[in-house]
Amino acid sequence: MSHRVPKTALTLMSAVYRRILPEVTKELAFWSRKAKAIPNEELRIQAVSSIETKRFHCQGGAVFALLSGHRWREAVRFIVAYQTISDYLDNLCDRSTSLDPDDFRLLHRSMQDALDPDASPHHYYALRLDQHDGEYLADLVRTCQATLRQLERYSVIQPKLQFLEGLYEDLQVHKHVAVPERVPRLTDWHHHHEDIAKGLEWYEFSASAGSTLGIFCLVSYALRGTITSEQSDVITNSYFPYVQGLHILLDYYIDQTEDVEEGDLNFCSHYKDQAHLQERLGFFAEQSIAAVQAMPERLFHEMVSQGLVGLYFADEKVKTLPNGVDMTKLLLRKSGPRARFFHWNAQLIYWWSKRKFS
Image (cartoon, rainbow, N blue to C red):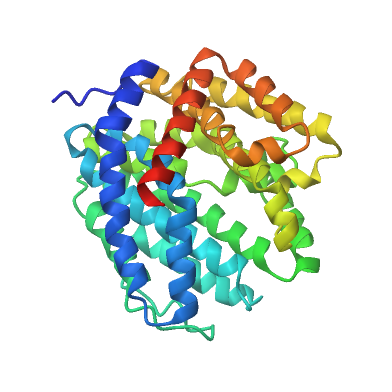
């Protein structure tokens, strides 16, 4: 079987259907069984819910495994485990009775530990009432570490992984504290990072910090064994801020109604109006393509950006949003024919997932 990096939309989707989706399904089934065995009821509910409602995060993220050559299964295992940590903690923090930033920081220490092969898992629940998860979170951490221990060139990507994870962790702490504190903390954080914010507004910088795609890309290239320090820099600078920003702004865009109902912070609500939101999403779509032009396998990374647009606008929630249909048409037009192809395929994947997991 060929393990070349796909260069066309057809070969990419063929690999996704034949290899990536079945492998993701297998990995998620394993973690779903572990989640259902968690002793604490609240932790069990959030763990099971995160897998059932956010599995498409793993399905999309695992596309990066196609950069790993013959080690693509190892990449899928890492990506699913790391993304499952992210989704689980997001549920815990969004639906938590805690508003303690130290609690959120300790929970997210697991994402830091997962990227350090030598770290020992901590007691991540020490600052909250619900604590006994039957080693669920620690096992997710250990799974990620096991993959990284097999990397000959881990030291090449480690500083960049720490940089991206550090931004992600800061964001998750600031955005989940008491409502009156969220925006002041995020604007102050943005002010202290103006050197890397590239003129973005605080809510756009925050979105750019909230994605795991750069981490998946770095680990996948490292598994292939070809990554250099210079390429590590190029990958990080290509994905942060614009590709990652596009990813999370689209994620927040489709969740607007849900976030209003739940009282969650949504970055898209901070644009002055729908026209401004349309303009900036279009800007991120264009900049994400421009940002990857220096990447190895440039066509693959262009398709990642176009695939994000296709994937998120295939979600049925878009139809319920103000100007959702118009926004879909605009972003698909700006992103080009491949985005429309991915949009159709994403609709098919959503349908397939519902049938398989209902």
